[in-house]
Amino acid sequence: MPYEADDRLIKRLLGGEQRAFTELVKTYQSPMRAVAYAIVGASHADEIVQDAWLAVVRNLAKFEGRASLKTWLLTITANTAKSKLRQIKREVSLDSLPGGHDFNPDQRYAEDGHWSKPPQNWEQDTPEALLSQQELRECLDKTLASLNEVQKSVLMLRERQGLELDEICNLLDISASNVRVLLHRARLKVFATLEHFEETGQC
Amino acid sequence: MLTCKELAEQASLYLDKDLGFGEQLSVRVHLLMCRHCRRFIHQLRLSQAVIREYPEPLDTQLDELAKQLAERHKQP
Image 1 (cartoon, chains in turn purple, brown):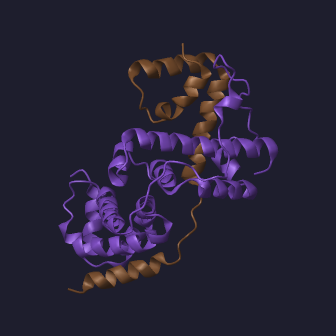
Image 2 (cartoon, rainbow over the protein chains, first blue to last red):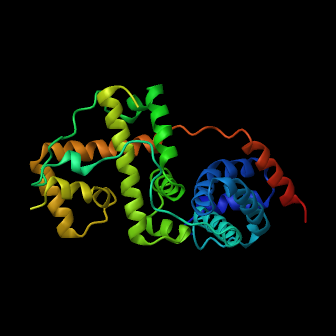
Image 3 (spheres, helix red, strand yellow):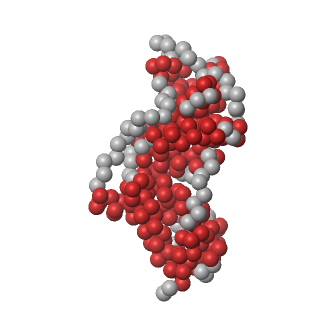
């Protein structure tokens, strides 16, 4: 049985244990929201997640453990979102919104491809030290807000949820090359934000 | 020989272990020789960790949602 922990949780859920539902919701609300957000956008994401939860509860007994619980939940969310999308039709753009910092290769490398402006040492050199700075967290909020919906979801699903790139492609219906481009640009934006803050102390 | 600029373009693929054997090797050899790129990759990893550990606003409504779902589950 490859997903023993999932199996145990499902049994508790089927048994109607309140604490199991709390555990389920707290663990999976965030990745489900990221998927919904990527597909239908901010204005419909919460509604989709609600609908997806109801579908999950209706279908609990049908969970067969062929995939992980997380994959199953995210697939239900993606399907719920996609059927909604047919009603609201929305163009998915790969462009970032204005705002936040960019890593601009033209300003960083000489013509021969070597660094002209190499990265400098950062005073804060651990995630904890970086995140302990309130102002930096505000800068990061701005940068994350400047990512488009799909890009932000790709970043969250990859970095926070540890989903494989293939899994993200399937859930969000985007190509393998698109998901890589989106992820790379998003990472560079986060890097550029941290770098700018470490160098100037400002957003 | 990989340039620093090309290394940056492949950085995400490198971090995701998504490069072929030869390409992965080129990146590693470059990193052995180039401290700027070593620092760049180090700081990119740090950026990843920052996103991973970024505190998420606690959703106070989740307890209520869980309760509703448990209730609904009980109904036939």
